[in-house]
Image (cartoon, rainbow, N blue to C red; front, side, top):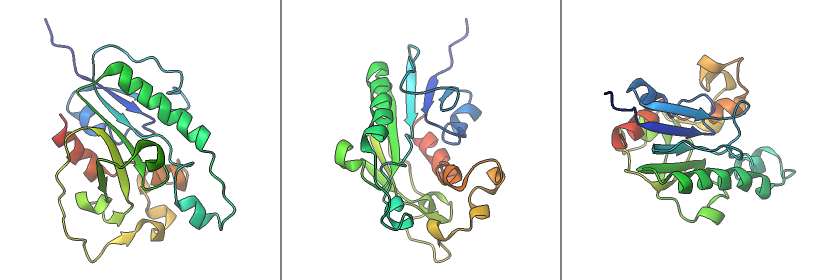
Amino acid sequence: MTTPRKIILDLCGGTGAWGKPYTEAGYDVQLITLPEDDVRLYIPPKNVYGILAAPPCTEFSFAKHFHGKGKYTHNFLVGLEVVSACMRIILTCNPVFWVLENPKGYLERWLGNPKYIFEPWFYGDMYQKQTCLWGKFELPCPVHTKKPENLIKFSMLKSKDIHPEYYGMLSRQERRAITPPGFAKAFFEANK
């Protein structure tokens, strides 16, 4: 008799970059993302081992204020529908570990202080973009603890330099949302 593979739900996972290390290690990673799957309607399977949740940051991001020149308003109710759906799935499954990710922004108003805040450069991806993590998980070990001198601010990256493998297939905003590969690997190593 074969042992069933551990199930990892990758909620709002987009390209599946965060779940990739789990897939490569033989886990049963189930990518639940638009347009095929809507987390608000999703009914999870039994025996879920871990959950990676990355609800869209559009309504919670500080960046919209800076790039919208003061003409952007947040629709928190729309954003919270998706966050609430992710939390419903987490509570229903009661997995061994779970994590909800969002860039530094307004989501802290509803979820409180994050358990961990990281920058991609901590894990070898040479740009900065503060990202908050909430949940029940082991902290990933950073590769760098001192800010590298050759660091590029994420907002200063040229569009074609943001995940160039997806350039032309995904919008700049969609590419900005991709989980940094160094972080994804470190998170996997800490939460197998």
